[in-house]
Image 1 (cartoon, rainbow, N blue to C red):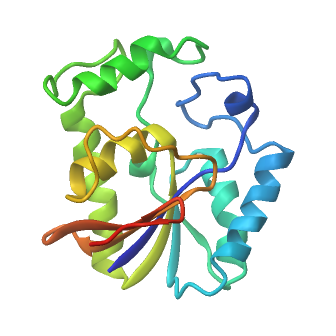
Image 2: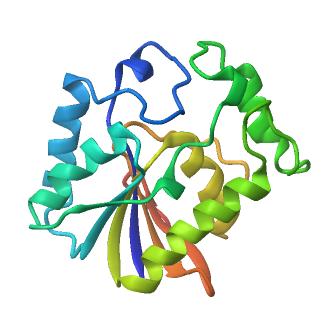
Image 3: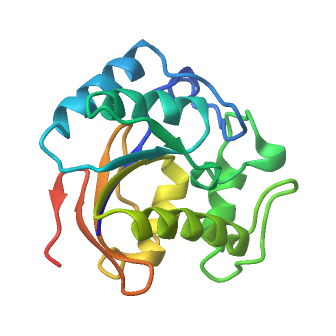
Length: 195
């Protein structure tokens, strides 16, 4: 199957560099709402059968124009949520959060207080993606920056790990494959990959 994995649009938390991972999270700002509409335009020709999103406000708002133009509803999957920041929630210093995610390569049990370890994150995110892949040939899913930057390199064999690739608001990672056969990145933010 083909999965359009999309980062949500811009929020004021993004603008102010606030680590905002908890439910319900910040809504899209004016720029983010415009990005969501532009995303629907960019993907107008994609044969998307279903549109999913995490249940965080910004993800649902980003997915709505894409779904509406196809006469679809947004299917919310909490498992597509951002990796929780735990005790670092709402900080503007991302050092501990980012270093925790980097440590997962060799220390998957490590986590911030009130956070999530790698095993828990991959279990829930894998389950969400498998549910989508088992039901559709082509689907879109709106998720979150850190979750996408961690999950994709660990599940797609053709992306370096850890990835330092930029993933801006409403950037799309197009994947092909399945939970059983594995995933290949076809494009990352419009950069085409050779499978």
